[in-house]
Image (cartoon, rainbow, N blue to C red):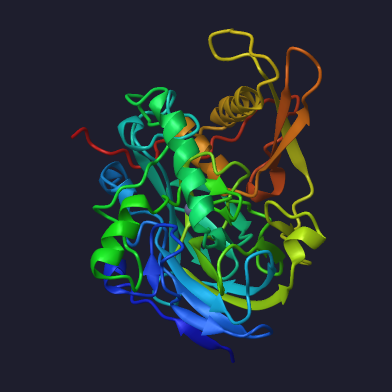
Length: 409
Ligand code: ZN
């Protein structure tokens, strides 16, 4: 059995664990060292570090302190790794803790983070998902059960000093175009809640003031939220600092493409078993700027879909030019309206599309003025026939149920 090189305690605050951090900065010391060819296990908090409870109130989602996220385990140093190398990471397995057989999904309130459909669902809501081996279902969304395509939402290596400065420059520039926007345009450095792993004293203060937030995906990978980057896949990461510094967290039991609900996929605490190797000078050898990866040989077999189309005309009838974001939003809204005909509330349908193994595709980006995006809804996750037929939607799955809604503050 591989060694567990980073352990966590779910009953304690992640701030007490110096092998955990929540900002990107090259000065964060390595939490542990391994050698090329080693395999090892890393334990992870859920991305909020335990801020969400397994209960029937969404007040915790409403009150989440987003400046604390994401809690990452690492950085793991790999002996011999140097800037310009590729760090090869095989995800050998991912699992849940015996004492924590559940996960959560939610949407943030518009005032606190929002989400893809925040104009339509401005209040905080959540659904709880129970794990039964490789399957999951939710007491808040009846009529569905599916196999998890388990993966880390967030994984990547520490940035160099120069790269960090560039991230901060460009994100501040965007933020400054509309500093009062709700939700904000970018999450800028915020020292007060920074957890810089083993760093202490003045060095910690300085790094905390400029440490990049973990919210966006960037050149190093980071918070990509790619559901297919699942157990069994192999990832090739650019290395920017000596020893590489691999960090991981934000484990998802399952997620739909786009992670549209933002308070995640099905978010969970758990462990990840990885093996690392190096390709010396691999960034230049293969012209790698962003990570590349090879998917798992194993995926849940859902091969029948209802596919919803959307084009880049928004809810007010305004024409947008080849805008994939608008088009995907229309595909999602179309799928929600369809599911409402089977008795789901809009919030239940929205949450389901954030959690289930839904595929999102950019189908066309050249046919002016409309981009076309598609949302692929797997039909076999439902315990009733969700396809259209002559009789109409006779099944009503969820009368009287809805997602817990937060109270107004
Ligand atoms: Zn997540």
